[in-house]
Image (tube, helix red, strand yellow):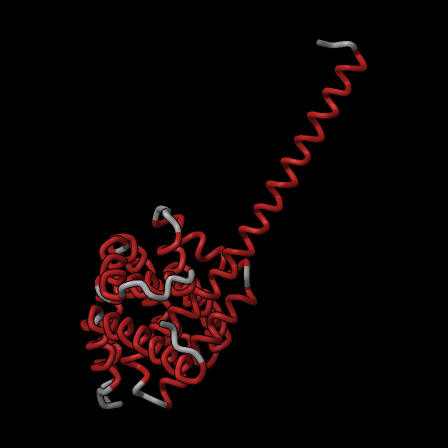
Length: 258
């Protein structure tokens, strides 16, 4: 029996808290090596800047084998929620997504890891040189595209059956082709991260799953709009073909052709 009123509202809220927290914890556990090196870098003394950068590079190196498959699994669950399947079994859905998308997420992660490493090096070099700080803003723009395309990559990975290169290419094209949606995705992620920075208990329980849900929700809006445009174009082409066929039949009647 479904509860209604205030108690029903509290029950639904508690359900969503459970869904988001369980999924986030699973994601964090499956990517423990990555987070170990990240937090090791964050808690090193500021005097050991070289060690901090080294730890971050190690974190980037292990991310394709830990963080990326775990994130793909989390997006698998988020996709179910956005598509209206809110009562799916969390453990089963998560680990099925982990298994099914492991290879492609790892391959995509290898490319993204290399690109992020290059970005870190370039930003470090250019920002340290006063005469080249303007160029650093260009790389910040590239970094923005890279981050949002990463969200789109995971969304497309769990939604489409495509080869890895096609997923990567289309993720970048959607990011560039839908700039307002891309800005919206990044803005929502930043808001969640800022809230998590202020209320640190959000990190282990909600940050990742909330960002995944919002990112896929935004991607799904893009997908629905693209699908509607494709259907409209197909209908217009079918109507045009029907009109052309009618004109040909009329012409045959006039000329007496059989």
